[in-house]
Length: 342
DNA sequence: AAAGCTAGCAACCGCGATATC
DNA sequence: GGATATCGCGGTTGCTAGCTT
Image (cartoon, rainbow, N blue to C red; front, side, top):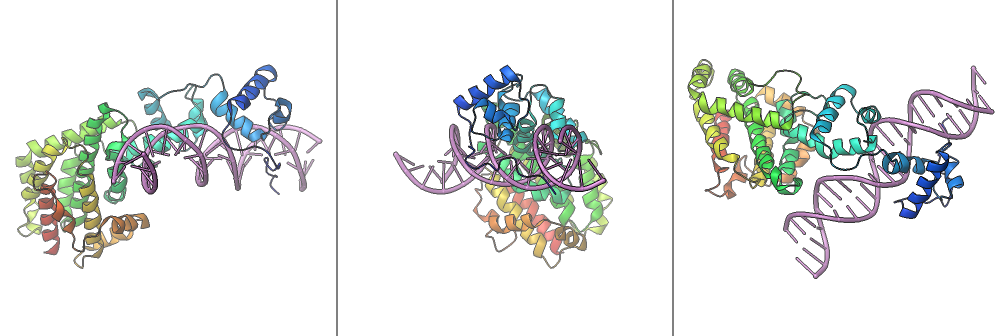
């Protein structure tokens, strides 16, 4: 069955609307209403299909459409509605006066999705992303953290935070993935995550999560003694692994990372790629990691291979500027690498 | 200065739901 | 009750301005 396509007429114009066409459409609808969209073009003297007219009217010409940037309240509402409704753009538009479904959909796809990813939240499930999810999103995180993605000077700080957060998440992920001791991972990760709500993060804004991120680091920076006690309880399973060196390394890195302006993005990309290669191929890969890497989507492997020309796990670090604070990440990875080989 | 790249957005396409005959 | 027409939605495409190299 099915219906015939609405725009099967030959010679019907497609593509961008001209001001003249807009005027014809607006004049006609204001005078007569749209009535049957199928018949409207002929009546209005437009060489367009009805569908195209309807779209142009509802998405652009309607007098009650609000133009301009989305406000923070609107963003918050969209995120909340998306968590409840999913991709029901029209239902969301019904709750956002003056906004069209198309506008909301575009805004979601181009802005909000990235923001949620940066926050470590899965834009589909609205839950905190798992370690592997986060690793999978690192190229996106890094791309989003690059200068060109931010449209105002005021957001440079946010961008620095994004790069910072990306590092933070990589660290968290690596701890979970590489450590042969699940307990250490759990300790470190729970330490990292202790101040974050376990469940639904849908109501948290980027600022909230970045604040949370800083708080978590404060936990790391300020509670190493406590952490040492906590971690020490589990180190019997980790022969001479210097957990505190790991934490110290991260502390050193995180202290200065926020001052960066995304310059570390490339290096992070290399780090991601090379560490993924390492994780995917190491003979000593723990079974949990093997299982986990098996679940990685193809895109990761493509990204990793595309971004890494390094033949050894952390060769990508070789070209780093010694003055760059990213260098200290090498310490972390060296230790993780060494640990993994034990 | 020019070529290449990317993000943002307007518009199109295909399909399911609903209305009408 | 089946066939057909229309509408509306969500996914996708492609154009373009701005940025980078």
